[in-house]
Length: 503
Ligand code: ATP
Image (cartoon, rainbow, N blue to C red; front, top):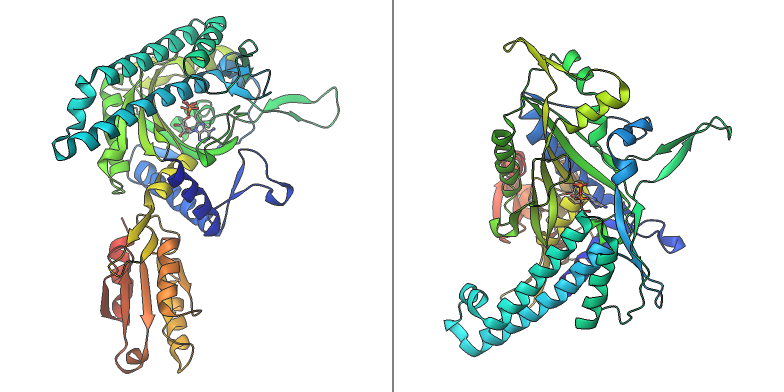
C-alpha cells in the first residue's frame, strides 16, 4: 500500500541505498543514483544472477556489449518502427499519461471498491469469513471484476488494432464512470517512440544518428555467431549479459520500478527449432526457482501468461512480484522463435546460421529469452525486506531483512566500549574478516542503538567485543532476524558467517 511504499522510498534514502539523481538541482525525473549501500546491494543481486546463469550453467557464457550500436540494429529489431507508447494529454491539467497505464489506474480504482467490499464482509462475518468463496460468489464483486476484465480486454484489442480513437473513447467513458483525473478534456492518443537519440561524430554533416540501446538483447543477437564460433558453443547454449538500457518512459513513476536509465540482466538461449516448448517450460521453472531461492515468500510471485503476443513471440510469460503497489512484472520469459536472427540476417546481409554436426544441416536457431530488470529486482527485495516489528517491551524496531547473500554489509564489529583495548581487538577482527566479506566497524553510541542501526541497514550479523573477549577470545554474535545472541570463538567467525552468506 501507499504508506509502505513511502516508507520504502524514505528508508532507501535515509540508509544510503537510493538517491534522486542530481538532487541539489531538484532532481531529474525517473533517474536515480545508487548510494554506498545501494551500489553493494545492486552488485550482489547482479552477482547472484550471474552466478546462477553463467557460472552454474556449462552452456551459458556472458558478454558485455557496448551501449552504442550501429543504427541499423534498431531498424532490424523493430524498435525504430514499433517501440512506441500510446500517449494522451489532459488539456486542462496539461498532464501527460500513457494511455494504457491510465486505463489500468481506472481499473485499480474499481479494484479498490472490491477490497472495500471484502473488508466490510470480513468485519461482518468475522472468523467465518472465507475470502476466496466471497470473491467468487458475491454479486457486486463479480460485477466489478467483470467490468475490469471487459475494460482491459477492450484496451488490449484497441491497442493491437492500433485503434487509438477507441482508446481515447475508453478513457472518456471511464472518466465519466469513475472520475480519476477530474477533467474530461483529452487530446487524441498519439504514439511516442521510447528511444533516446544522440549523435556520433563531430561535424554536423558527417554525424551519425544513434540511439541509446533500449534493451541489452540486441548486443547478444548481433554477436551470436562470434560467440558461437570462438566459444565453440553447441546448441542449445545461452549468452548472458547485464548492462544499462535507456527508455524515454512517459509515465516514469513508482520510484525505481520504471526508470529512464536502468539495468537489465538478460539471457538469450539458442535452441533447435521445434524444441521451444520444452525450453520455455524449463526456463519458466528455472527462473522461478531462482527467485524462490532468496526466501522472500512463495506467495509473492505469480506467472502471468500473455494471451496477446508480440509479433515475434510464440509464447510469453511474466514473473510478477507483489510490490507495495500490487503484482507487477518483474521478469519476462519469451519464446522469440528465429525472429531476431532472421531480421539481422536480412538487414545485414550476413548469414547467422548454425551448423548442426549431428543433423548435418544448417539452420537459424530459435531463441528463448529471460529478461529481468536489476532495479526492479532491487525494489522487490528491498520493499519485501523492510519490516517494522513490535518487540516484547512494546517498542518497535525497523529491520531490513535482506537475504544474507545480498546484504551490503555482512557483519558489523562493535567494541562494547571505546576503551580498555576493545577497539583494537574489534579492528583486528575487521582486518581479518574483510578479506572474505564486506564488514563494518562501529563504535559510536550505546550498543543497543548500534544494533538498531545495523538492523535497519540490513546487516545480518553484529559481533560484539567485550571485556571477556580479552580473557577468552570469544565474542557475542547477534543474529539480525532472531536477535538471538551466542558466544563464539573469534576463530570460528569466518565459518559461521560464511555458512549464511555463501550460496
Ligand atoms: P513494462 O511493461 O513494465 O514497461 P516491458 O514489458 O516493456 O516492461 P521488457 O521490455 O520485457 O519490459 O524488459 C524486460 C525487463 O526489464 C522488465 O521485466 C523489467 O524488469 C525491466 N524494465 C523494463 N523497463 C524498465 C524501466 N523503465 N525501468 C526499470 N526496469 C525496466
